[in-house]
Image 1 (cartoon, rainbow, N blue to C red):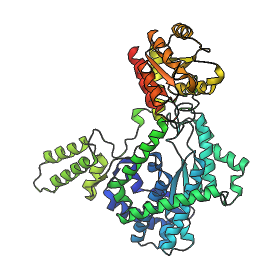
Image 2 (image 1 turned 45 degrees about the horizontal axis):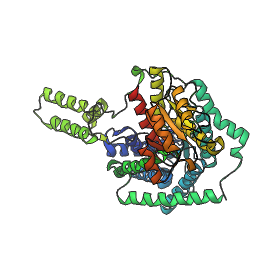
Image 3 (image 1 turned 90 degrees about the horizontal axis):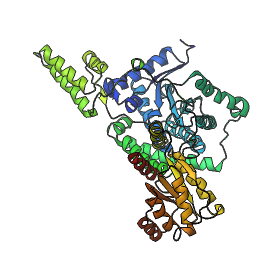
Length: 523
């Protein structure tokens, strides 16, 4: 037993956040956690009982300060559980492993890990813990939610950036997600590349040869301090309001995540937060990477999976109703079975019913946190394009009416082609158009129903309004303009037949979705 190394991975708060249920409830889980810590301390000195994993929050879109604060609050809750089981503060601290996420935002990931170490040291120092107890055991996992399904080979770069950031941030161990993790079960090739990523960085980049590579960098030190200040304030607020479990159960965690996800969704829709290979520089001609679908009989049903639309409160009430029936001395067997079936229909798992009968402790339910995939809305457009291709033999096409010399609009033309490709639309660019007859003839010659006018800003007021009705007359379902004219010019363009605008900083995701819908309905 003395030679064993590893951990039990007991993380009741993380389990509730991830799956939406905690078998036997918080009190029993907390007591079990403390007992595991006492067992590990007595018989398995190389094994740690508790795991503070922020994976559910990281994958759900948490900011670095949120992730740090929730890890601190969870760690303090687990420390109290170990102390209640009879462990000293130093021994209790030695029973914890922290697991944080790393993303391809390298500087943020490095600063987050450094701030986590700093604040845990601060929290333990405030508790008068010894120097060794202030040290954190830090595991870092890569972000699966940021793995794209389109152009998945770019995920190799994401994985490299994540491992690089984790190593420079001071991780004790690192797990890199395979490049095909967003598609399905990874194959041996993808897993081998994942394992070798950190080996290559260690052997060829010598990331393990410097004690603290980020020390002295103003950008990293400033970012670390900023994350630490915000996280510490959030942590103190959670403690004042009763701890991490209460924050999770009362919806404060999900509310904070919802606000952040709404902000990021707007940035993704405007491409201010680009997704390389998906919303930026997409490859319409890529060969899809296919993985075998998971067979249903091999899927392990997770505890707390709902079979219908029942809320966590309804499932919990069903368990309590089952308890009330059981407590009735003269309860008929039929009533007991009926109550159990009613709970099962609402999504209460059989394990929870069994544990309730055996221990008298009801499981705890809450809404599970769901993953936030930045690439998802753009990949949905590509999926619609694939469906269009299957039904019609070609992808949605757009005719680009380029007005004036190429030198005037070359950059805007490239930007427009790239944007349309992100939605799965093939752009057919015309040669330079200098008159209405040429624009009409070129559009009529191509099998397209979507037209995009591309020109310099100086041509928005004079030439674009003349071209739009010509394109509509030749059968264009939609006419868009690439550019951001003044409000007065934009209104005049709409009166002349321009349906929408495409410009940087606008919600181009919604604009392209509407364009695809119009093409789908027309065809």
